[in-house]
Every structure is written in C-alpha cells, then in structure tokens.
Amino acid sequence: MDNSIIHKAKNTISSNLEAIRGKIKEAALSSARRPEDITLLAVSKRHSAEVVTGGILCGITNLGENRLQEAAEKIPSVKNYLDSQKFDSKQLRWHLIGRLQSNKASKAARLFDVIESVESLKVATKLSTTISEIGKTLDVFVEVNTSGEPQKGGLQPNQVRAFAEEIMDLPGLKLVGLMTIGPHTTDQNRIRASFRELRFLRDDIVDNLPGSSFLGKLSMGMSGDYPLAIAEGTTEVRIGTSVFGKRPD
Image (tube, rainbow, N blue to C red; front, side):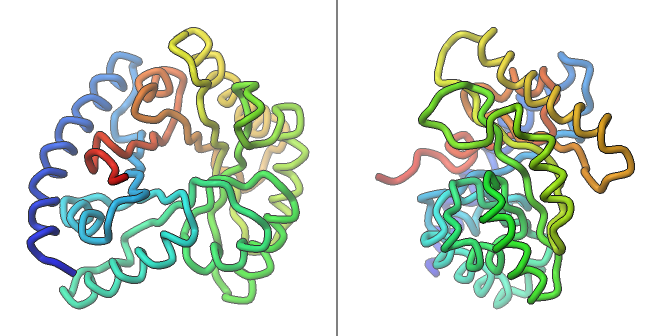
C-alpha cells in the first residue's frame, strides 16, 4: 500500500466526517432523536484500499461494499495492512449492500460481517449453510422494495413478515433489521412515505413475532435523502461520496 495516499485520504476524510456527523446530529436533534442511535455506514465502493484505510484510521468502523469481487480484493488488503500496523481490525464491520446472487452467497458469508440485501430464501439458505460450517453468526437485513420502482430489488412489503419468520428459523443467521432504497425522485413526501412504510413493516414484525431475536434495525437513507430517513426513524444511513469524496470512474 502507498502510505502517501493513505495519509492524504486520512486528512480529507477527517474533515468530511466531521461535516457529515454534524449534519446527522442536526437531523437527529430536529426529529427529537439521539444522534448516537444512528450508525454511519461509510460506503466505500470503487474507492481504493488505501483510501478506505485512511477512513478507518479516522475512526470509521462500518464499511459498505456493493460488489463482491471488488470487496474480495479490497478487504484482505486492508486487513493485512492494518495487521502490519498493529491495528485491531476486529472492530471493523464489513457490510454487503449490493445485490447478492445465490451462487456467490457462500463467498459473501465468509467475507462479510453483515449482509444487507437478503431477498430470497435460496440466498438465505446458502448463507446459513456456509456460516454454520464456519461456526459463526452472520447478521442479515431483509431488503424490501418500498419505492414501487421495478428496477429496484427487494421483497414486496406484503411478503416481509412471512419471510422474516423463515429467516429466523435458519441456523447461523441473525435477522437484525430491514433495508430499503428510497425512490428516485425529488418529491420529499414520496421519499418519506417509502421510509415510513419500512418502519411500519419493522413494527409489524416486532408486534406479531414477540420473543423473536429480531433486533428491529432500519437501514435507509443515502447521501441525497438521509435527513428524511432520520426523521422516519432509521438506525443506519449509508453514505459514500460525502465521506470518501467523488468515486473514481
């Protein structure tokens, strides 16, 4: 790894983090929420291992990747460098937020700590089989399409509770929450309605599956709409460019 790139990235990201955390705090307080209840998931897709390492050295602990192949090269590189610097990389949590095909589920289970895009029983079963063989537990989110946009992935809202019950029966998987991507629009009412529906679906699971291991987390809101997601109760926002800067082409 190039230490000069890491150092430069660290300086830039440190300033960016201060700004984005300030905005998250402002949005939380304006909705009578505690800023510490909202996790910042720094989306590092297409950024180099050096840039990501710079972010980690600034205190980032949750990182999101979209593409399995890219992450399979980047994550070990980052971990090896941090180990060489005596940095405890065990505190890091790597999240897969992109679509996952069933033929890649086994590899994803071994690489990531959290899978946020579970939308089929076939994928969930393969994750369960692999993680059980390893002897670990894998946190998963169920992806839900609350925007109504056909190009987006995720379950239909009326499928969520039954699917959640099936997930909770699979060994090695811990259903921690629900994830959605807001609609591609400038209509704030429509965006908020999409996020609100996910919150209602979360509440439905909590109310109808008492005593389950479901943690009730919500992953919703990105750079363009995270203040609206915070207002609607998200517990995690997925932000990339505002943290790491413009993505390379």
